[in-house]
Image (tube, rainbow, N blue to C red; front, side, top):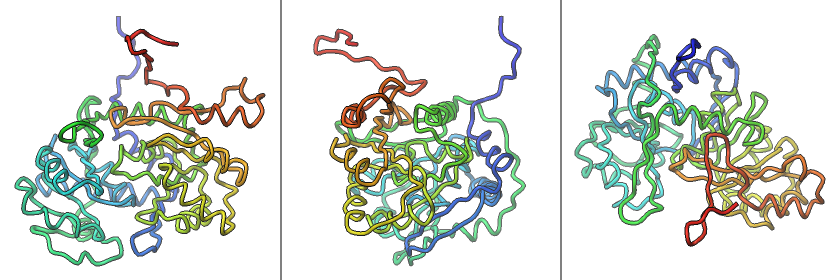
Amino acid sequence: MNGLMMDVPLSLTSLLKRTKENYPEKEIVSYLANNTAHRYKNKDFYKRTLRLMSVLRKLGIKEGDRVATFAWNSFRHYELYFAIPCSGAVLHTLNIRLFPEQLEYIVNHAEDKVIFIDHSLAKLLAPLASKFPKVQNFILMDDGVPAGVELPNTLDYETLLAEANDDFSLFDIPENQAAGLCYTSGTTGDPKGVLYSHRSFFLHSMGICFADSLALTERDRALPVVPMFHANAWGIPYGAAMTGSSLIFPGPNMGGPALAEILEKEKVTLAAGVPTIWKLLYQHLKSKKHDLSKLNRMVIGGSAVPRSMIESFQKEFNIPILHAWGMTELSPVGTVSRLTSEMEEWDLDKQITWRAKQGMNVPCVEVKILDDEEKELP
């Protein structure tokens, strides 16, 4: 016997609608390649995303087609995060730091139809353009600096949006339909593609928004420094759409001084990135004081966080670090190290020792530990 509750697909379309219906005035801030700040609100993001979906249809993008991005974290990349999968296509985020031969293999293996490229990154992809036989168009996105190179069959992002209409009709998408594609190079041989469904993105968003996980809420101003081409920026863009968090995108501005300025000016409450990024921030904060009193948690993953980093940020700047672990294949967050209620009675040094561990699995992720003989351990 089946239940009688509504059977609604767990798709990104519902998250896109939510940004307009529940949080239309929430701010999205992007620091571009020329260090200028672009600001608009969810209601603007929603309208432009519908226009972008119309653009994709006009370009001949059909259900299941792969559409690639080669871009920094920005409002345009965020629009692509929703427009591509919500139109039935597959978002393929290209890692800008891969070797040319890896990029050539990935684009051709995925059979990308279109690639959206930031001006400031065009010179990295231009030498490879002739080696992508399936790519029909390169869409250039002006992030404040000249592209400086020519690509074949180029179109301009803003021109396309200006010529489009915003009456694209959203439709239900089966939750198990492919939504995103991300290749991992952390493997033997050629990079391997991980194909995400709408359902996996939706459930992952729920998982990171739980209070004992990353705890994204409507009150947050979240700064995903982790790239949107790296394991979906740890799901933070989708989590922000689900809960109404404001989003701050740093673009290529990821040095210690630039991040400190952004964190202070934008009153960021949650920031996420790899240890190398926060080491640069720490070194800068040692030499120049900034008001980071709003920053109540920094999520660090990608590689193990040294205990000394957790201790230094906590004791010197009163910034708690959430140590997280995950994999591209997990959408990607798998575990988050948070103190339980019993641990709150421990002294600070003992707490920091625990927080240096990877923590417990987030909801919807199962964990099993085996020894060398494949016997299960507690």
